[in-house]
Image (cartoon, rainbow, N blue to C red; front, side, top):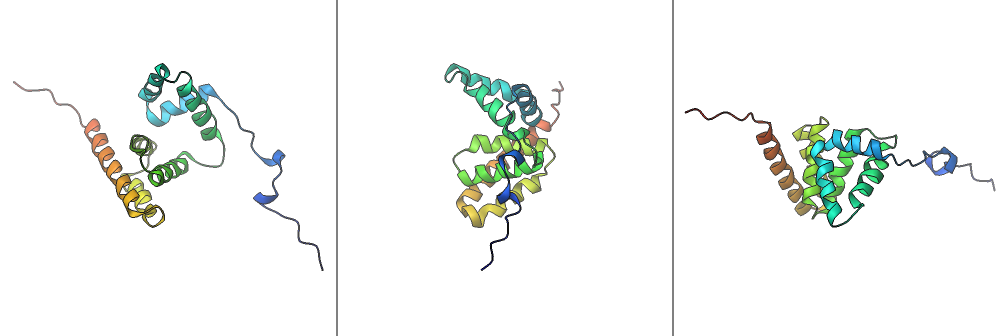
Length: 154
């Protein structure tokens, strides 16, 4: 009987091979502003009255930590976010935020829609339909926000 071959690939990674987790508050706030616009940090900051420090923890750990890791492009992270939030369900405000973020980083409406449609056999038709309703409403809101405001003519 021969010994099994040594493992190769990700299963054989040692802790020294892994990218250390970093937490960069400044990079987190900068990325949040890039992804979601300048209003996002202020909106999160509104939570400080009820949950002091929680918004800063979210931005620092998520946008200044997880999002800073190498290995996935911003587009890939948005696809994962759209899929996870649609699958989770009941998180319509966060899904709408990530639909807007996806458009902001250059994904098309068709790509966002296709991510959600692709999920139907995996997460169920009701959750995919709910995700599509959120996406549709967000597309409409985004389109209206992009329309120039015309001055009233007297």
